[in-house]
Image (cartoon, rainbow, N blue to C red; front, side):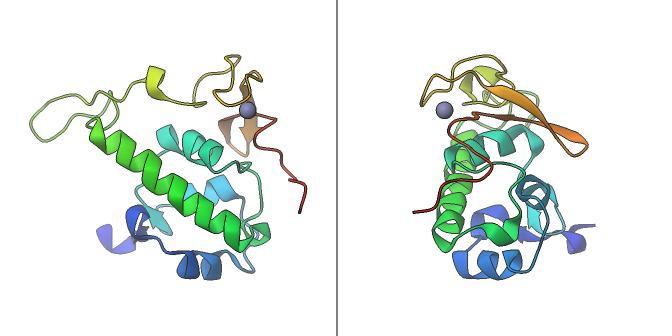
Length: 148
Ligand SMILES: [Zn+2]
C-alpha cells in the first residue's frame, strides 16, 4: 500500500509541485488530499493550510502562480510542523498510546464556522467542495484573487 503513496508533504519542492500542477485541472483541495500524489496531508489540517496560503480550496491547480506554489509549500510545512510539535491531532494516538494535544481550539479556520477569521474577523464559512465540506474565510481566500 505504501508503494502507492505520493511524495511526502514535508519534502515538496516548488519546481516539482509546479510541474505537477501545470496542465492539471483538479481542484486544489482534492489534489492536496490525494494520497497517491502527496502523502501526509489529512482533511483535518487542509483547511488551515489553505487559509494560511490564502488559497481557495476550489482553485484549479493549473491557475496557481509560482509565488502561490511557494507560499502553499511554506504553509504545508508550517501547519504540519505545528501539529507535529503538539503530538498530532487530539483524536490520533501515538505508538505509546498518548493522545495528541492538537485540538479544535488550535485550528485557524477549520471547523470554526461562524467564528471570526483570525486575520480579518470575517465570519468563517463552511462551503461544499465536491463531496466534502471546507472551511474558509471568504475575504482572505477569494476564489479568483485579483492579480497584480
Ligand atoms: Zn479573513
